[in-house]
Length: 223
Image (tube, rainbow, N blue to C red; front, top):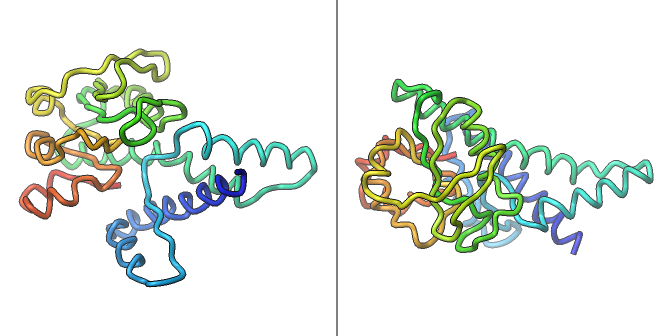
């Protein structure tokens, strides 16, 4: 169980670091992953994202690392992967700030609508969800944060409790930026993309919709 969780944590950490690298180089990391996946052997597809959540992958490897520190042993891969994966919520918040700045707005005073607060698709579990850190980071920067999750009625991030709002046309159009954190299958991505003035996509969920409506690409920022 520990080896499985460490394996996933390390490989997710690797592809998350590639997302950070690709952003520095102005390259789309999702296209890189797609290209690497065409190799018929020797490559296992892992995807970048806003950070790790749940009660296994973010927790169990750190328990192992803690146990080993008591034996004067450093689990370097485990700790490095955790450092990278833990950085991703800050990265998403930074992409939001850059996206707003490109549209002549600051985070402070902007309304940011976060879509999906559960730690993974189509569940109601918010344990260790990266959305909680993203919400707190944006609120600390002065944004008015709204949340919507079809599986979660209310969530606490930092010192504030957030109730899920209905995902109306008005909510989408009135947000300065919509941030997709958890790609629930219930989300109508084409509708969201059409109505939102600006969107940050941490799951590449907009890829199919953008193929059908490439004119909307300018309003989307992927991590």
